[in-house]
Image (cartoon, helix red, strand yellow):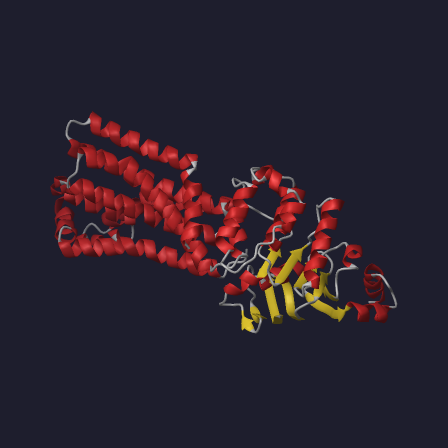
Amino acid sequence: MKKIIKYVIIDLLRNRVMMAYTLMLFIISLSIFNLEDNSAKGLLSLLNIILIIVPLVSLLFSTIYVYNSSEFLELLVSQPLQRKTIWLSIFIGLVTVMCLAFAIGIGLPILLFEMSDVGLMMLFTGLLLSIIFVALAMLVSVIARDKAKGIGAVILLWLYFSIIFDGLVLFILFQFADYPLEKAMVGIAVLNPIDLSRILILLKLEISALMGYTGAIFKNFFGTTFGMVITFLTLITWAVIPTWLSLKKFKSKDL
Amino acid sequence: MIKANNINKSFGKLHVLKNVSVNCAKGECIALIGPNGCGKTTLIKSILGMVVCDTGFITFNGKNIAHDWEYRSQIGYMPQMGKYPSNMSIGQIFSMMKDIRKNNNTILDEELIESFSLKDMLGKRMNTLSGGTIQKVSASLAFLFNPEVLILDEPTAGLDPIASEILKEKILKEKQKGKLILITSHILSELDDLVSEVIFMQDGQLFFHKKIEQLKSDTGEQKLSKAIASIMHNK
């Protein structure tokens, strides 16, 4: 297993897209921290960028990478190796490099400029988001045989998680404005890892006071240690379930 | 050594393998022949576990391959169209495969690497190679780990006459060591002096599995190509 992970990581580290991604994150976070005189405000701007870019790059890059390694996969499958080993090695390789890029591009500036609770929380959720979206990308690429279909599905997934989901939530909120939905919103937030991360970080920032009654309910739930543990467990589940499903699918895939 | 029992495989609506049962014994050199699209490559891939059959099972040395993977260390496989990571060089492919497959008691067989003079182009990237050179790499990889079983899917397609002669000699040599060799090919004339048994497949079904002497005496022909032609004709 270690050997294959090694080859995947070496291959990914030489990848120019990965370097560009790291550099882009680094430049964005440095310039944001330098523009704002208050680094807490800088964090907030950075938050929105992280929540859009990290899932998109993790999804797209991983999907394309898995499709492009179809030859590598085919070569390995005919060798005395377990399919589980092959698939998990690719997953671990991708996750390692994605997390590395994030840690260098965003983590380093955060540690330099704003090493607070919020900063660390942001670093942590960013890493978790990278893992979750690599897992989702691998699930899509094992289901869809066709590369174009796979990439299309991944873009739709990203749109869903970052835009459509919020739209649906707003729609529900307005339609059922007469009912007390505050508690239900906690449950609904669990369905979207991006929202979950956003709530986690926003609650750490003091602006949650501006979010009204729902904000108070959120604070009551997500602000407590119990709530935080549940949230992190949910985020981990978001990574584990797609990985497990894709592994199951890959084991019986014809190559 | 390799036994397939009533295997069935469909790709969507296409029923590629229909109740195929074969028994390949050690020391034989078996030719797997049949028209295009009759399921030869699918059969080979299901033996390798690259394709998972719908029903039926395959055993290797008496062990079901469904949940086993170690048996593949005894197989050398040369695919019909070798596909390799395009950004790796020939040398990197070889060292990666050695890294993955080698354990302390394998004796590496680098004879083909030598005779195909691949040593001179170890630095070339896979995506710059011609089809024939890729075939040479595939062949060298299949023989590299001195496996007990060799599965060669159209080994000489795309090779120049000299290279295919080298490969044929190598196959003969390995056959004399008592290894099981499975070859698919459409060039029947070159199988004549290699094979000891013939499996003929048609439309996903096993048509016959005979010793070559018996096949020749049944048809009264001396050449494999003639024998197959007369069978196709009489059918």
